Length: 234
Image (cartoon, rainbow, N blue to C red; front, side, top):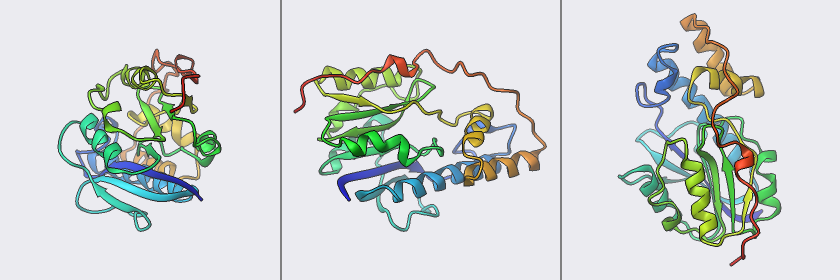
């Protein structure tokens, strides 16, 4: 067991409130069920990590399946950067943030971090230019507040914020966030036995949908844009 808190950032999977870009190929209710499956897979993976504490940083009223072994911290109001800043101020000790939109996340993807938790920071870039994970050995919300979220350059800005603070930043593998149906199909192919893949198959069969093949060109911010730094460790 390692003295790390792992927090999953999630919101209640309500129709019309989550995964709206999966519609109209899927119904709003179908998109919500796919989102719930993505969250369930993520919670199962995180619960099995050798961390001292597991937290669900939650926006909603009804807790999801799989949250039984998590401490629940409810999200405050404000923009996503402000809410993440709140989280990184609220947790004492090393903190790893994981999103709910990468159901393919695995212990192997996070292994470099757990092998070297003394590094100042670890950053997990997403193909769309954002990030799917962020670890700070000494968490502080000021490193996240003011970062523009849900943009093509979110990851680049966040990474620059970390390195600009003089942190020694390790880089995890790049993962694909599920935003669109082609994204979902690519991720489902990676984890065909997952709850997520089964839910997507069921909803596509129900809707009679057939998405166009996806393009592998998602963002100009490929993994090569982020390299492990050699900054001074604090």
